[in-house]
Length: 245
View 1 (cartoon, rainbow, N blue to C red):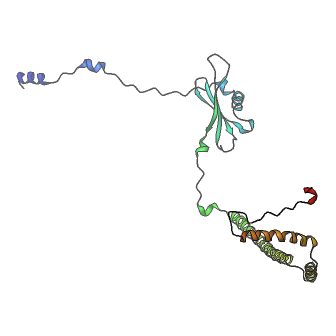
View 2 (tube, rainbow, N blue to C red):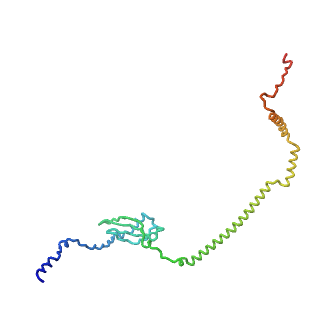
View 3 (tube, helix red, strand yellow):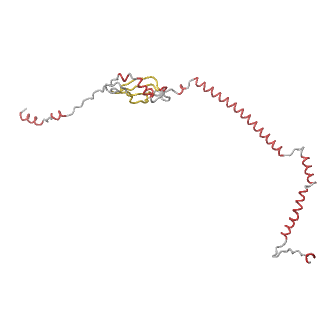
């Protein structure tokens, strides 16, 4: 190879910028986060954590101490079993903390959280295996008792209905008999009516006699034709001889 060709190849080769490579940022892997160290003083303060939980829940709903976990430096969380109805598998918690070089413990937070057991559903059981033989026998016996009770109640209801109908019929007969006169008292009632017709009441006759002329005058007034002048003539007046003297 001649010297001219060597010079041409050297001129064609690209140049590398070493300054740009030196200034490019270098990515570093993040350091693994070390777990928080459990503070011995806070971890031993189980009674203090329980007192904090009792401020929120009654004593009968707070169970045994489950454990303690370090959340950060000088910060721990105590957990207690929950006996709250309807919250199976849940746990009461209390967060405790303290300042550096201080032994005074502070309750930061209390509450109720679900655990792993509360989030798990029960194992699935096929329908054929869910009803046990003793449960089926108990259900059959219960149905038989209900049927017998219904039959007994039905018979009592039928007897009661029959008695009600008989009582209603007796009431109707009694009302009919009460509305009609007794056969034994019928002749006496007829005799009393005949006696009243034979001997009329004097006061009734007097009232009838007084009412007779008034009714006659009223009928005559209606029958008389209307005229402009009155048809009644003034009666003649006669002077007594002694009065004229």
